[in-house]
Length: 263
Image 1: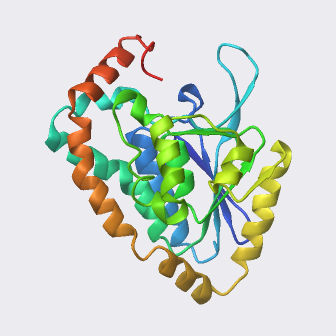
Image 2: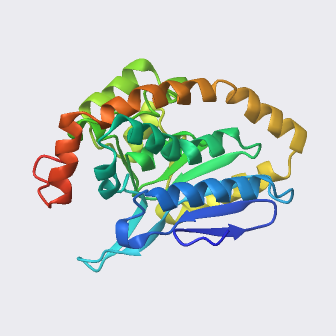
């Protein structure tokens, strides 16, 4: 498959997947869903790859002209204008979950190296990876409640990693947290200097990639054995959420440029 919104770099025993949609700060759309799913499945089938790293990049801010590190700023809001009907929402949420399922169902361990803003989709796709590390420039937030949505992964699969109270705090406050608070809450395992994040994750990926294929496969499959049930639960309730007047009104205002009450 030809990739246009992600990049793949293969190393000795592991691979790095980069989000690469700088004009939208790596916001996820149908193309990112499809390409990330395909990339994970492609690398999972490659016997020379024993571990993957998912990360973002540092772009030049289009308005400020300054370096802007970003993992993924969330979901591309424009795509939500087409899911006002419950049936459309049902099809849409399955597409959204394709890369999540690919990551959790792959036999290859996947490390998230969160180098910058990780909001909404960015937060949740990092969370479904087997390990999460962050740079000091990272920021995390689940802002779905502000526009009448639900962080569907966090309230289902996220409960395996985080306590009920932490999930409630993140989802109900929509608060933006820094990497140290993310570490305290258990969202990330450790925090590194910006320039040290990827080298640290690469060293870990290289180490994992040299381990027994059978052993690491069994470990990963056991850890994620309940994943499909949780995704099916989310697929049942999210179409109704998408179709609510509150959510559709919020996205309509956003696409018209009125972002005062949509953050």
